[in-house]
Length: 241
View 1: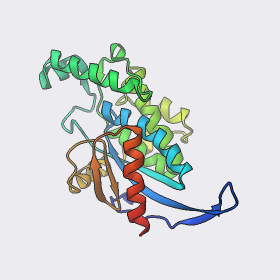
View 2 (view 1 turned 90 degrees about the vertical axis):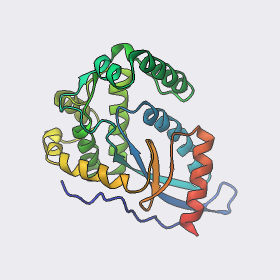
View 3 (view 1 turned 30 degrees about the horizontal axis):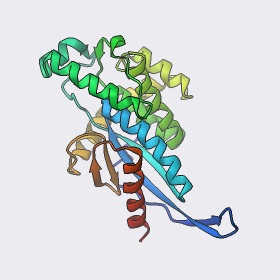
View 4 (view 1 turned 120 degrees about the horizontal axis):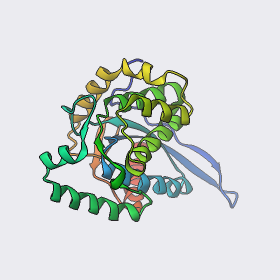
């Protein structure tokens, strides 16, 4: 696995197609980098909202290709993760943690991000999962990477699975079509993930999810669908100017 996923990207060129009334509709392509941690509830909520925004943007002639970049909310978490209640009680206090969960559940309902915290017993270490996300992009492109990111969010938040467990990751990798032994190939890139996570901190982001174009921070924080559409239309205008 190589170290080619530095934060800089090159925006694609626009091209024209025939519109529904016979006129030419100029299509624009934007390469967007989305910085996430796979155990961040607002990253999951943001993805579900962004998914809907991408449909609207495509209808307006803007095609977005996304590269999902790693962020480590808990960089010092043991490889095996921790008991979720123990970890969150120590970090936030359990009552505060429950209130945080409740806010995420309510926000998620509005965009189709489903949470079942009753099934969660572990706070997962996500370094290997992020390495698998990088591998998916290298071996299968943006589409396979997106499918894996989605499957990892669902596994953790909806199914309560430990996405730091290599057996769990292997099942998910197989389900999205990665070649056999994908987790073993990804493990060798754990240090690359840590380096890339350190690189993204240099963009000035203050939390996740965060959104970048050409390695430059656009904003941090999930948006509603309209918010994503408006911000990404502006970004496409700037990239195409």
